[in-house]
Length: 311
Image 1 (tube, rainbow, N blue to C red):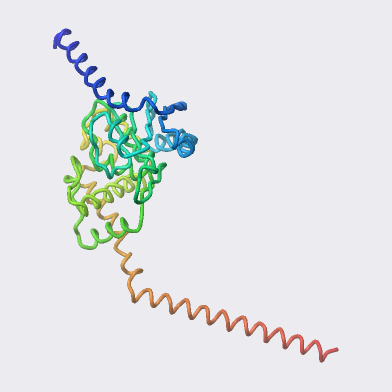
Image 2 (cartoon, rainbow, N blue to C red):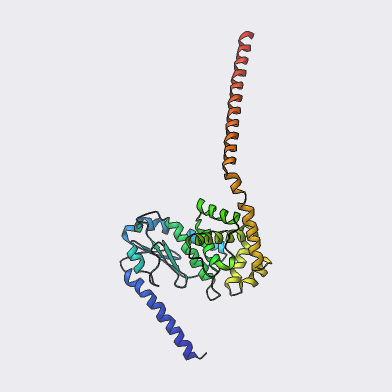
């Protein structure tokens, strides 16, 4: 490729990046700005208090996430907190995003856009959790910069893992999938997630447990090596063999065995029969405890009577 063609390509890329930032810059001129060692925060005056809380913890959360991933990267991450749904859409450099989203990450721009809790009419936003989720996307994107596209299960699994996004409904979803043998094949959540809501939710849950499996079963050192080598451009199959000594199909089998071992017993302890059995045990233990307490009182009275007659 000639230098002239290369220069034209670089110039075109620069123009595209500038154009992407035009909506962001023009719509965010009235934001306040606060910087830390690795972040520049932009927020509305009405969000100053909640932004301050996030700013105070941002560096610590960044450090925790990057320690889990086993690498660091340079550059100041821009973080915008949009005070309204309209402003949230206006400052998106790539155009419209789903209105239900609470945050968006742009790894190539090192940019995060969050929706202020004030902008939510129904429900609740945990701003720190959303920040952790989106910053993890930034970190993963920076780790894989210039290499093959990040697998969706790895990107979303890590984001959920780091943001501690968990609840009983997700445990229920993975348990049901394990017991009914309806887990989504790994090949179907590598490039994209399903559009259907229930299966999309299951894809997120599976991704979390796939990352959790690699970290808990084989340790953080191997996971760091996996991220480092995979991010450097080595193919997934080769990295798995080199780091974990198995291929992708074996990874899937081991992961499924892990899920079956972890979740197949949950219906046993949550069944009606089991619950009544546990209630009965608790009742019996309580009854025995009361009888023992009464017996101790009677024995104390007898000792007191013996002492009285001895006198």
